[in-house]
Image (cartoon, rainbow, N blue to C red; front, side, top):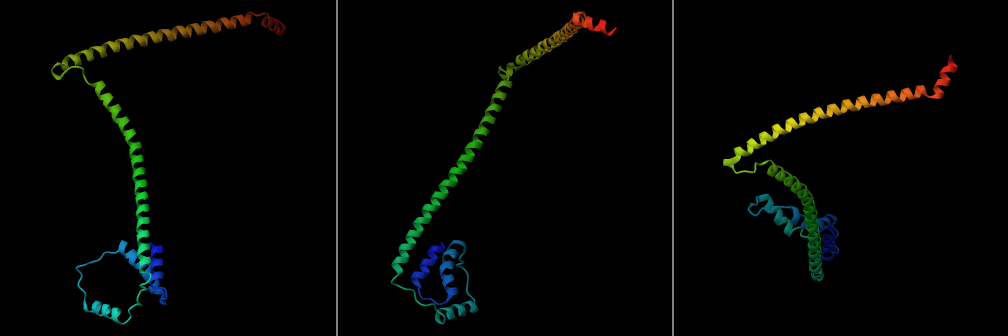
Length: 193
């Protein structure tokens, strides 16, 4: 944007001695076309009308160089093509990034929804609503059977733990007895007396 403004200023007004006008012509028209709003319904008061008349007739800037006008138009075309290509590439890159982020989140969201659907399907009764009472009765009976099975499993586990504890104590007692009865232990015992 600035490069195009500078080249336009240099081609159309090559010998302008006023520095403020050089910067104004190089930057203001292009930046104002992007950021400024033009109010078409605004009525000019007397001060603005006098200022416009004085500006146009008294301190009018020098005429632009008409021989470089075709080069400015060519540069404008090149500038617009380059900016359109750059903006299009930027737009494609932004859409690609957005699509990638959405795709990553969509995969997570899809897995979560699939899990919820499977859990909901598994928790539903097998029969239609008028016969759902049969399903509820069968689930109640199954839960009663499972509680008795778990109670029996707990009793079996307690018996197994008790048996393992007794067997461990017996094994340790037998090892201690063998250690006391060994010849090295007897020799040490008799030598200590």
